[in-house]
Length: 404
Image (cartoon, rainbow, N blue to C red):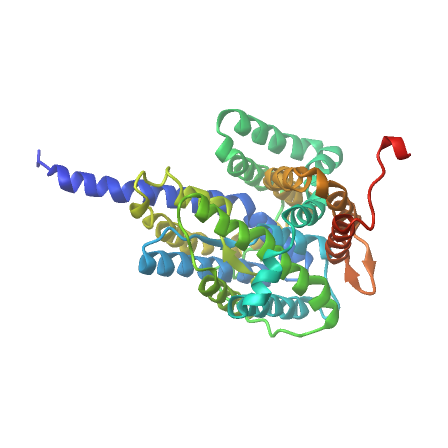
């Protein structure tokens, strides 16, 4: 046998551990929510080809961002798509102007992200949104989707119960892989029960389908502005917090500009926003990537390479999902988001002082109301902040049991 010097063996291990962590982060991140991305784009009016193009373009964007930024800075900075953002898109439906108007809203959100990196007061304004209110808004947006698994069991028990059971078993024995296991079981269920019309899989090679953005007030107010707020409050700021918790202090402005530019490019191909990773960032930047902080940067680079390969299956997945029962796809997405809902509710209700404003934000957002053409998340955010300010100023105080 050829003797491998200890130093070389150690060097290989130094790279193998973060590479494996990065690959795991990409596979878990993609498998957990790619169905959600496709369902959201389809609900917003995208054709199967446009939905596949949107997912493919975002995979390319975050793949390149992960590889280039981590390799150049030698820091484990991770990028992903906005899972809360696509959950929000799934709830608003198709706006006036159809999917081109959605692309226009994506472009507006991307422009605002760039401006946040360039204009410090804007960044401070977003950072000033109370965490409890932001979490409550996110929880309200996720609630309807997280009810989908229960609704699916009620409407199609023979299809939905195996998926739910697989998820529960995964939680018990392999918690990190629970959602990917449920996705695999969903694929098996759909493969054995879904009858694809002739020609469904034609043209499913990965491709970028251009979308000419159209700007409408309806889409900008209902989709663009809330998507920007959700992306900043629920992805970019938590992403920075995760990095800080692992000992990495980052200059956020250049990162916002880069993700905004990437999001602007993908908007022309039907893709939603790219942003700093939060959940998967903990895998790439934490001790499980490598005990030595300085040797964790290959993890996001490896994740980026995986995203490039995973994106190649986007068009095929979109075509297959388009022929599947929508409720079943939403059920899998709902299972993937239950942990996000739990975390959002926990963050919203953690502090007693902001509990009532947060609950107001939650119920308003979950109501799905539209006032003056503006959707519920906006009113929930504004209302919750207004109530919180009034309580802090002492103008309004909740009555205790003795005052009732």
